Length: 357
Picture 1 (cartoon, rainbow, N blue to C red):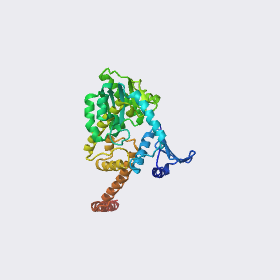
Picture 2: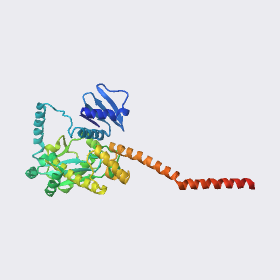
Picture 3: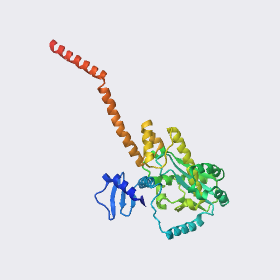
Picture 4: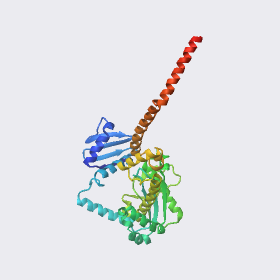
């Protein structure tokens, strides 16, 4: 898997510092450095572009995206600065929308793949042409702009009218398959949600649409072990903006994810932060300190880099704490007195033994 995007200068500095002891000796042309961590190869170029390669490339890329947003007030560097290019993109999106918008469709979308805490949720929904005005009135066309609070208000109305199938991949499920990369997880869940929805009714659909997260051949490659695979799929980028069934799938998934995160928050006694940034690391350290490291197996995705940061801090404190306890026990007045008595008795016994002998 390969992920490439551009970062700002302040994130560059953080990245150079972070990978200082992980750099490779040889550097590709025009690169600031190339490093390797846990099977992922990271190459930072002079232009500001960074490339992540490997089975966990998406996880590392999301971690630094989160850092970029944290350092720049939630904004990523502008990749497309020319107005002509923006207009061209808008025109292309409009043309693409005509293929996917005013049709009967089944669409599927996921939530939770970039969050350290919480499950991965995938929802497939069926939207007929008759339901387009209803969804537009609720604001589904601009689904990305809806806040969590608005989603909690709107989605209950959607699920009363729109057929859907949701699959929740819990943290326990996720951690039981560390050999799966995130794209394989998504492929399995999308396939399961689509097939599950189709079992509910004989829907009259024109297209089945998924927001493209990998090449189609890779998607079906991830499903080679599955006995039942739905194959007639349209893969397209920005599908949520083009297809209302994908937008519905996204909103319902977000709704379910919010509910699941609320359950975890209630269990831990504090609001759980989203994403995979610094706040998540700090929160993780607190709950491990309170509940022990095994709490992460139930609430988080252990193959994220956050786990190493959280447990590294916990391990240092744990080793120091154990050393301190052993030192206190060893040099406590009672143990010193007991040790002295034992040594005195042993000396007397040995003395008597020598006399008798």
